[in-house]
Image (cartoon, rainbow, N blue to C red; front, top):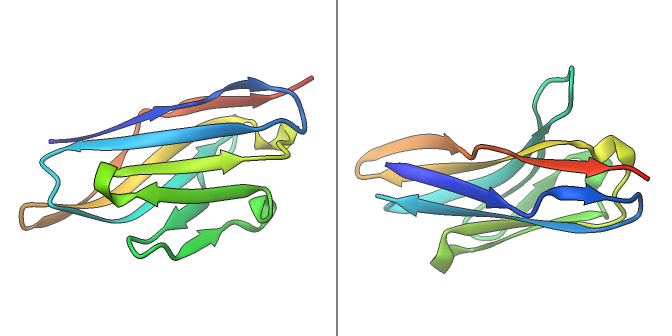
Length: 119
């Protein structure tokens, strides 16, 4: 019914930048919060940033001042601009969307995109 397709991951040197994108498609009536999570090897998945439909943002402390989340409601797309990347940012990044599909509110996840920060 709903698909989230991520793009923009890759390998970057410390201090570099990457921009992730996540486009939602399908039988979507409306999307509430959209967010990015990440999971490093051997660790639990953690919230990176979330943005409400109105544009209110929340970040985990470790990325504040370096990452910026934004969204385009007309395109059902969320972005994550990542600057000043550090090796500890290496993880699989997952997009999440809280969607109304008909009369049901459901949580959807993307397939994940690898971000590797290494010299």
